[in-house]
Image (cartoon, rainbow, N blue to C red; front, side):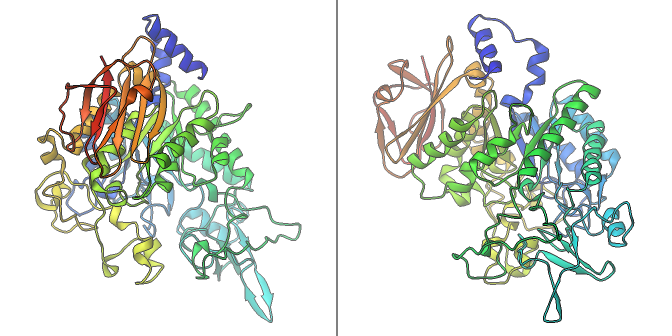
Length: 578
C-alpha cells in the first residue's frame, strides 16, 4: 500500500476527514474517466457530425452517470484523413467541431458541473498539411529536421526507401517527396508524417502545445500512440536496420509482417513521457488548482508499461492505460483468465501508483459484440468495482454494440487501405457510430436524417431515454455501480480477486471499520452455487444484494447466506456484508 493509501485508510479508521487540498489534488486516483468521440457524441448544428456545442449540451448527462473527467478524441484543425489524428494546426479548433469560443464555453460549463476536460494529444506525427511539414519539405533551416527524412538507397540503378518498414495502415512506411527529393517516415498514413524527436526543437515545440491547452483550461491529456514516437537511432552513416520477419504472417503489406523491434517501444519514449509529466507539474505550479494529468496509450509489454508510471527520480504518466483485459479477454475466456489478467496489473503496480481498468475504446469492437451482450453488466461491474480508475468509452454504459458497415460505406482509413476481403478485420467504423440518445430520428444524435456513419438499427430499444425508465437497464445498473464508488471501501479499500472454478469470478473490496462488498460474476451459461465463506475471510454469514442484473432472480436488499450463493447463467451481482 502506497503512502497516500495509508493516509486515506488511517483517516477513515480514526474518523478523520482528509484535508480538502489533498483530496482535490488527487481527484484522479479514484476517477471515472469517459471517452468521447466528438464526431459521434452529439450534433448541435444538423450537419450529421458531432461537435463541441453538442458535448456542452450533454454535459449534464455525464454528471448524471458520475463522470469525473472526459477525454475528447482530437478536435484540432485537420484535413481528416484519419478523422482528426492528422493534425494540421495543434492550437486551433477544427471548424467541423466549432470554434475556440465553443471550446471555452465547454470548459466553463464543465467547470460548473465539476467535470474535467482532457484532450487527445497526438505527438507521433502531424498532418502533411501542417505548416511545420510544409516548411520542412521546403528545406527551411528552422524546420528541415522537424521530421524524419532520408534520400533512400539506390539498388541496381533504382531508388528505394531506406528500410522495408511497414506502416500500421499497411504498405511502406516511407513516401517520396518530390520537392524535398527525399523520403519521409510515416508510421501511419502518408498524410501523417512522423515528427523527429531526436531534434530538441521538436520536443520543445510539442511541450509548448501542452502549455497552450493547459492555459486554455484543459485538465490534462491522453497521449496517443506513444510507442511509435521514437525509432531506433540511425547508425553513423544515417541508416537504420530492417526489422526481422514475423513468420506467422504471409501478407507483405500487413503491419504484422515484421516484428517491430526498431520502430516501437524504444527506451527514449519513456524519457519523453517523463519530460511531458514535468511540463504538467510546472503548469500545476503556474496555474494552481486541481492536479492536471497524463493518460498514455501504449500497447506494450507489461514491464515496459510499468515504466510509464515513473521511476525513483522521475514521475511519468498518471494513467498508463491498462489494456490487459481489452487486448486479451475474448468470448471464450474463463474466470481464471480474467483473474490472471487483473492480477497481472495489480501485482506489478509500482509502489504508490494507481491501477486503471479499460475494456473499450474507439479502436476495438464494443464489449457487447466482443464478449456478448449478456456480459455487458458484468464487465461494467469489473471496470467500476476494482480499485483505482474506471475508464469507459461512450455508449458502453447503455450497451451499444457494433454496427455492420459495408465495404462501400466504410470510411475508416485503416480499413480503406486494405481490400474488400480484409476490411472487416481492420475497420473501426462499427464502434464509432452515433451515440443513441433517444428513439427519435437519428437516435436523437442529430436533426439530420443523414449522419456521418449510420445509426444502429436497434436504437429504438437501446438508448438513454428508454433505459432511464427500466430499472435493470444497463444504464441504471451502471449508475448504481458508479454510486458505490463514493463509498469509503471503494475509494480506499483493498481488493481480493478469486476465480471460483472456470465459470465464476469474484472479488472483495474491504476496509477496516466499513462494509465489505463482494462482486460475483457467472461468466457462462451454467447455474452455479458458490460458497464465499471458503473464498474470503472476515465476511458475515449473511450477505445483502446491493446490485443485481436482469439475469438474477433476487432483488436489491434481499439476503442470502455466504456459504450458498446461487447464480443464474450470466448473472452478475454485488453483495455487501450486513
